[in-house]
Length: 380
Image 1 (spheres, one colour):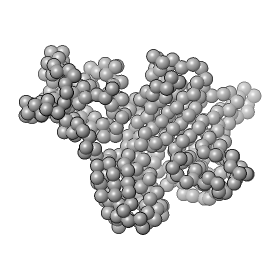
Image 2 (cartoon, helix red, strand yellow; image 1 turned 45 degrees about the vertical axis):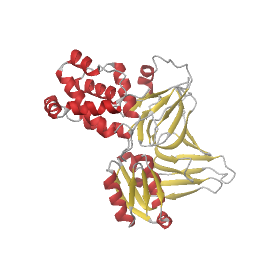
Image 3 (cartoon, helix red, strand yellow; image 1 turned 135 degrees about the horizontal axis):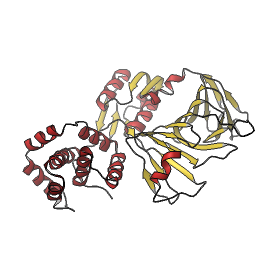
Image 4 (cartoon, one colour; image 1 turned 180 degrees about the horizontal axis):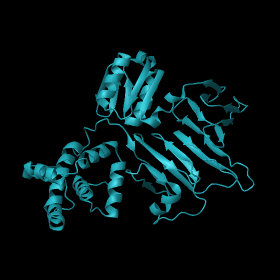
């Protein structure tokens, strides 16, 4: 159920005062995770920890006018919300609520017609066996499967051996600690599928999208290493203990595996590539559906720049650049001038740059104009 601006303002106020219940925390986390704009708004509301300023600012507002405007646009489910808040928590939370409501009403604009393009944030969800999806905590930024799974599934206990699915939306990313201690950074619009507990003989996960893996080394009782497999598209990557990045988005033409440390062996299911490929550090395998796979030496820093809060482009076509940016900033784009698709882009862009700075930098690098209309960008 979608929360009204009044309900959200009440939750944020309680959060600032440190009296938010567990149920309220869950509701607020879900609201924050549902939109990058919501998270940006939340951060702007809680960044100031001095309640005296909140109170002074709230009483400087034309409160009666704000509430009257809100009444004209909102159907009240809880008409006595302000009276309940004042009775229960006193003047401080009332001031915080009115201040939060004021910002919410004018930033959300109720019909969402002025949604800004903003950088992504730490957002992800986990799908349970009954099909229900739970939002992962937005403040922790990582999820430890072994320690935290039981906590969030207390009302929906899992059966042993069940498959887990963790997904990030466009404009989201998340860090995951797998049951074997391996660490995974999941990029935007990506999905990782894995068992609640790994088999003793091998560990296998399936990836859709992009992720950076740091695989832990595990041995059986007889001293043999337990291999780790990553399945994506028509290939399977086998590792023992290493660091590597895999980009395998369904809309991209190629699956790209880049090795940082250790070694990996890539087995292919396609008829085009019959022999396995073994990568050494600073090598990359590029696999395109229906074509032969090849490997090349690379400066791998550009491929893992996203894990360090950057975009790094090396002679990359503007069309490819826009695809990557759109996943993180969650916008649509259209090339008015088709020739601009192939313009090569060089440079580094901070992953949390504002949309204004982002398109200003791209304009200088490409000599193109970027016209932003709500959540769509036109390029000419």
